[in-house]
Amino acid sequence: MSLSLRSEDRGVAIPDSIPNDLITEIFLRLPAKSVARFRCVSKQWRSMSHLPYFTELFLTRSRSRPRLLFALQRGYPCDWSFFSSPQLQNPYDCKVSVGFHMKLPREMCTERFCGPVSGLIYFCIREVSQKRDKDAVHVFYNPRTRQYAQFYELKTDFSESFLGFDPIDKQFKFLSMSRLYCNDKMDQRILTLGTLSRWRKIQCPCPLSEVVCINGVMYYSAEVSERSFAIVCFDLRSEKYKIIEAKLYLQGLFNYKGKLGRIKLKDVKGGNTLALHVKVLEDVQKEIWSKNVYTLPENAPVERRNVNIAGVTATGEIVLSEKYTSSERFYVFYFNPERNTFQRVEIQGFGRYYHQGPAHSVSVFVDQVVLSEASVKGKRVWY
Image 1 (cartoon, helix red, strand yellow):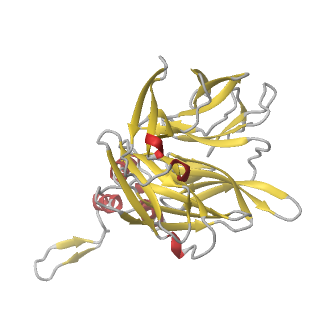
Image 2 (cartoon, helix red, strand yellow):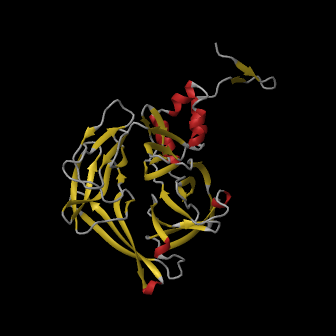
Image 3 (cartoon, rainbow, N blue to C red):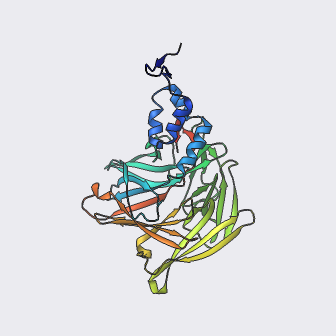
């Protein structure tokens, strides 16, 4: 029997439980970190947050809250700290504060990053000792909920590892592919995370560049024969690949509004400003690329040697970031090619964690989150 409270003034029965639709609406207004925490309150709340319709609704709300992710490196063994901040929403905002996420132990050296892939970041860390390097630890981190899963048993010696996501089957897949001395005899494998499946052998060209995962396809540059380069399109669902010929080895690959893009910085006008050379793969099957050149304003406070291309937002803004920070100010820059607008934003908050010392290397990632739910070794990870 359900209990109810009765108002003495009006004689209105008030239910002792909160309606499910009201709980859902409350959850939709919360950040992902809070939703993950409240799932521990009851089985009902946990099951509600796992429903597909809730995931889709939360995605709609989350698209208005994309973030920038920052990884700061200092010294060796590598001292790594992780932060995030909202992406530019108001064109009149010129300052934004970062939120601190975590700091890796100083004895742990980070070997590689991959991501964001559907909101998750993969990085490989290894404990550095005086005797030898210990086994690598593979970490899958969700910066929105600040949850992570880690593995020790993924053996990827003499290879590079990459994370991809299949949006149809909602599965993360982990690729281990050799980067050096690649030939037909090299061992290349793929593993579906969160399942009981084992490593499976695959055949595909070895990556020479960063790997970009877009709509279930992993793109990267590869040398398919001696001095012959190509773009490899590896479909995560079929685990087969397609080759797109390229005259040169292509770096600077990004997710450009759901398509593969390549962006290169060049000095123009005697070095007084920069030009962004943008190529977008408009049709994968027909191998059709579009090409555009965008010139930044002459008064734009950026120098090619001091900035990196961080990525592209879901709305098509190209994000540049400074390479280093110290106790001085740190900036990111947003360029909108369609509107020809340029905005500098000061990132505040690093100084609270690094008060003095040399400059720190900064890696900036643009989060184009696709909210869903999948499991990594049996653990559900929101992203």
